[in-house]
Length: 526
Image 1 (cartoon, rainbow, N blue to C red):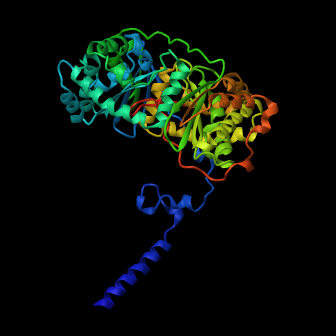
Image 2: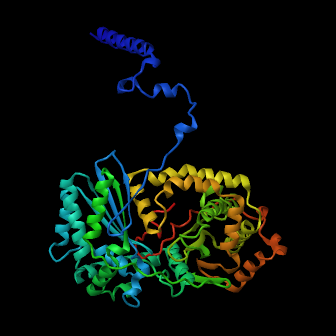
C-alpha cells in the first residue's frame, strides 16, 4: 500500500513538471487567471517608463447653483461614495464667539453627533450603522471637516445623507456631553505634562503667535473649555457650519450629474449663512526668542522655527522642495546628515513647513543628550544659515524633485485620499486641475527658485527656540547663535572629529499641540 501511494505521488510530480514544461508563454490569454498572466512580464525586467506612469484623477468642478464650490472625482471600482464638507471654521474662529473660548471648534466637532432634538446619540449612531455608513467630524486650525462614507446604493445613501443634514442643522450640544469631554480632557492634561515634545509644541505656537488665533492648542485648555456652554456651541454652528462657509468634495461611483445633484441637495438643505472673515496677520519677531521649559529628563528636547507663509504664496512649492532638501527627507536631508550621520547628536532631526490661511510655520525639532545641547543647537542653526547663504546643489535638487514625484501618487492611492485632496483644493481656492498639473509645476522649480524662496522667507537671525530640559543658560545660547550669523566665526562650529560617533535613544514622538490626541494643521496637503 505504501509503495502504491509513493508511486502515485511520484507520478503526480512528474506530471506537474511535464505540464509546466509544456506551457507556451506566447499563447497565454488575459481571460484565464489560471495561466499566470504575469509570467510574460517576469521573463523580462525591461519595464518602460510609460508602464510606470501614474495619472492623477480627473476632477470635475461642478456648477453648484448655490455657488458652493463642489469638486468631484468619479471612481467606478467600488460602489462607495465619500463626501467631505470642509468649513472655514477651525480653532482660529473660537474667539469670534467669545473671548477666551479656546477649544470651541474642537468641542463642537466632538459633540456634533451626540444628539439632536429628534434623535439621541445612540439613535444617530444606529442610523449610520444600519446602512454601513461612517460619519466623523474633526476640527483643525483652519478647517472644520465633516466626512461621510457610504454605499452608492440610494437605499443606503439617502438615509445616511438625511442623518448627516439632521446632525449639522440640529445638534443640541447637551451640557452632559460637555461635562464628559471635560472629564476626558483632564486625562489629556496629565499626558501633556508628561510629554516634553507636546509641551514644546504648545509653547512654540504660543511664543510664535502671541495673541493671534493660531496661538492656542486646537483642543483648548482645561480652563478654556470649562467655560463653554451649549448656547455658545449652537452659536458657533449657526455662524460657521453653513453652506456659504464650506466647500464640498465627492468621490465615488456616481456620474457627474448625480454628484452635482448631491452637492446641491447638501448645500440647499443647510443654513446658507455667510463666509468667515479673513484672519488677522501675525506679528513676526525681530530677534531671537529663547524659551525654556524645565523638565527632569535624561535628554534635552529642542524646537526652533519662525513664522512661514500662507497656502496662497507663489513660493510655496519651492519652499516645499527646499524643506525636503534641508530636513524633510530622512537620511538624505542636510539636517540629518549634520546632526546624526556626521556627529551622532540625535536619532532623528526633521524640519517642516505648515501653510495656512494666515502665515503658518517653519520649524525643526530633535532631542539630544544634555551635554550635547549647545553644540547640537549650534550645528543645526549653522546648517540653516549655510543652507540659505550657500548655492543650492543642482544634483540634490533634482534628486529631491524626483523623490517628491515618486511619492506624489500616494496622494490619490484611494478614494479617501482623493477626497481629502479635493477638500484641500476647494478650501484653498486652487484650480481643479491642480493634481494633474502638480508634476509639471514641480518640474519647473529651478535652483534659483529655491534660492530666492528661502532667502525671502527664512530668517535664522530671528528664530524662536524652545528647549525642554533641566537648566538652560539663555544668554550663553543667544551669544552662540549670534556667532553663527558672522561668517568669521564659522570655525567655531564643533568639528566632526570632536564629536562622539554614537547615536542616542530615539527622538520623542512627533510634536502635536494638544492635551489629548490632536490633528495636524493640514489634513491633506501637496
